[in-house]
Image (cartoon, rainbow, N blue to C red; front, side):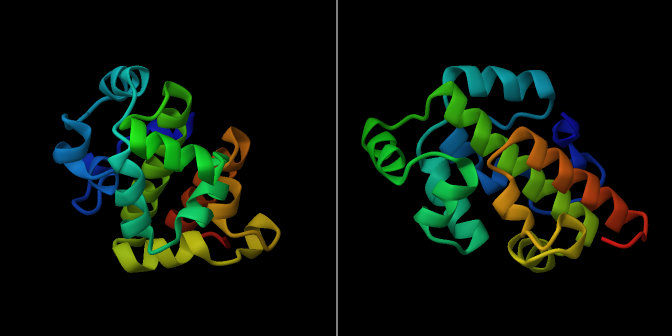
Length: 153
């Protein structure tokens, strides 16, 4: 998927790893797709959920919808301490989109605002509301590409 590009290499700003709580939560700082895959396969610490909630300025229920993971499951994972590989993949996908948006807008607040706001190029949907599916994530990343290239988005 296109969201696996690592935009933080080009511009400093909020990285996918820092959106997930950084090294204290991830116990690593993945810098390549293969490192992310290994982390997803082993399961990411449930602390990443709280980190994303803080970064995005959203509630757990909104994050639950964005990830397509029931809120009760997220609460259970917090007690267990680790997300499943499938859940880890979803939260990493979200973090990579956050990172990409920060690079495109060159401003964390503007990127987060864009992710949460209705977008005409996405038929009035907010980018965040489309991240529950792989295809939605692709649409969001493609829209970010158009924004980056100065096209209507």
